[in-house]
Length: 116
Image (cartoon, rainbow, N blue to C red; front, top):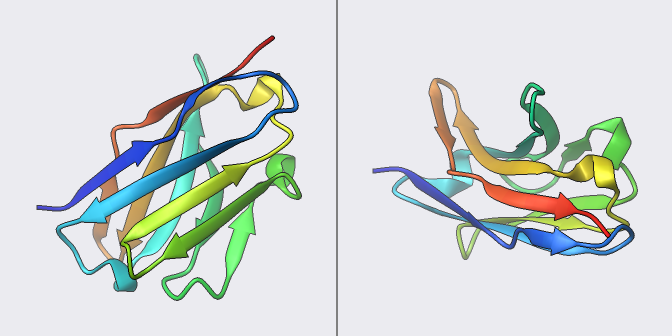
């Protein structure tokens, strides 16, 4: 049974940093494209960052470029999102997503709150 478990969320002041982790199990991790999405209250879920199965290529939404870094460790079946210079508008529930053809898995989400 496929499972994604996020961790690392919390409360941070503007300008601070957090590192999210997502541990995967129950599927062949190295085949899957991995993404981080987020959803703020009253807003649609949006793609934040993605990384290919080998880790060779990444993509980011414009608002997080140069502040967030996605990476994966295929030996540990884990994907990370390093978030620096956090802004109030980054407040959201962050979700890990794994995708391979018709297989699409989601984690339960982790709350990130940026506030002074």
